[in-house]
Amino acid sequence: MGYLPSKGAFVLLGQNVNWATKLMGLRAKDIDWTHGSGVGQDFICSCRGFPNVPLIGVQGCINYNPTLLKRQMGFALELPPYKSDVQESVYFPIEGNQARVKQVAEAWRSIQRKGKVSWGKANNRSFPPFDDWLSKRVELTCLPFPMIDPWYPVIEETSSTVSMNEFLEMKRERDQLLAEKTELEMSVARVQRVNQELKEKMEDQDKRHALEAKRFEMDTAYYGKISQALASSNREHDITKERLARASKVIEDEKRRQILVKGQRDDRVQVLIAEWESEKLKITAERDHYMAERDHYFRQMKIHQKEVGRLQQENTELRFAAEFARMEDEIGPSVGPSSG
View 1 (cartoon, rainbow, N blue to C red):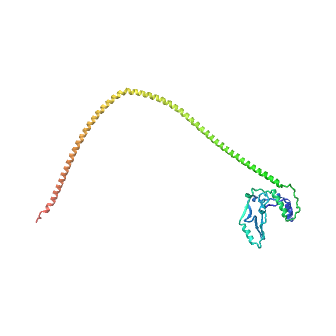
View 2: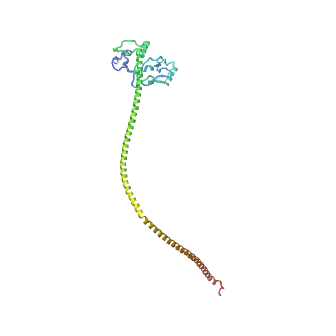
View 3: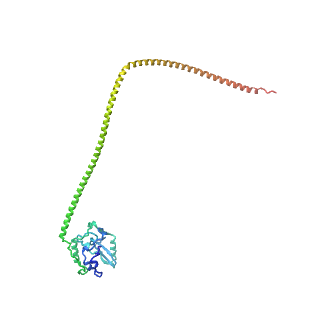
């Protein structure tokens, strides 16, 4: 998944130069190992029961080992891979192996992916343990082309590899630094938490201070109003005292006047009582006279009613007699003998 150089001596070599010869002059830093869109992403690492990824071609089936692609996917190559991760699990022709081809095809229905959960954050590097393993692997398997000098000069650079002891020491120091970093982060978190608590306390104190200041202003205004009300009340109290003094004087004068007129009032009361008794007797006499006249009127009315009843009876009898006489007059001539 990496990219070969797009400029420099590698590009300027002719098309007739063998590709192996061109690759011999490359260094690790000359290759763009990762593709921008795939860095740090999960990728297929195995299929069902296979420890790696089987591939089906036109002629047969082979496998590739995704563990060796970690750097191309943006993950660091720190330690040598396990033997099971780089073993040859599939290598056979299609002809005569239909059952195995079907097994490989079915394996693609269940794929497993790995990424940053298994290998951590993206870090496009290879570390000395892996580089040592790779060098020994090349010596063991041998390259499929002769080792000849490259056609373009290779600039010698100081080797960036270190020994295993140095690597382990650096790793130990890194782990120690990471532990110190974690402790510092925890300390910073504690300090930030304390600062946040202090900030919240200060904000609460500021709010309480603002409330107290506002309450003090309200109390001051309230006490000012009370002072004004007390001053006004004192003035009204003085005015009321003056009014009470005048009222007391008027009451004393009224008492003296009442004492002076009390005798006159008693005499007047006696006169009024005598007049009332006289008027009472007069009213009683008039009432008795009225009652006597009423009784006389009722007696006369009863006599009159009896007389009216008698006259009505006589009138009825007279009308009946007159009606009877009229009927006799009408009947009389028709009863006698008829004239000849």
